[in-house]
Image (cartoon, rainbow, N blue to C red):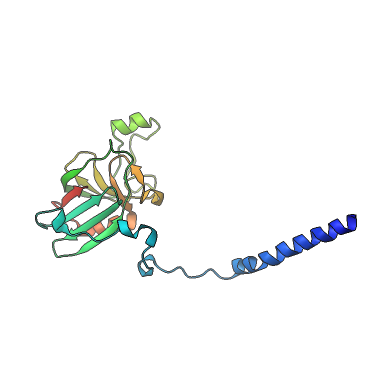
Length: 196
């Protein structure tokens, strides 16, 4: 009986090893070259949220440009005065109480902004630092920020890429740093903004 158990055990171990061999062999091959995201087809699971919008549905004129943050689809739309159109995935406020909706404008822009949490943020989380200098990888504003007419509401980057596409901010609209850097170069002070 002992000999049968060992033979059976050996057979099971051998079968498992045989099944695992292709995966082990693939793991030892050179890593595949990753296709850049701008060359991949759009992800179908969320494609309905990222459809092109018309600026005329949200603004009377283009002016120097327009930004529309769609809180529900977690997308930021940009229209330039020259007809340029860009669409970016974004983070949005954690709750409806933190969400400001309506029209605003970009009143200033800053590269590598410093961050000072508001009194409400510090009340919710007393462990927050009093200030984080610009350029610090722990700075939640990332590499660029565009300030709105509403105090403490910004469109900014983030080093924490897990936040994009989620309800994760205290009221701001967050973008991947690479996206906010591209957008920052396009947006002028005076650009119209709508949070919808």
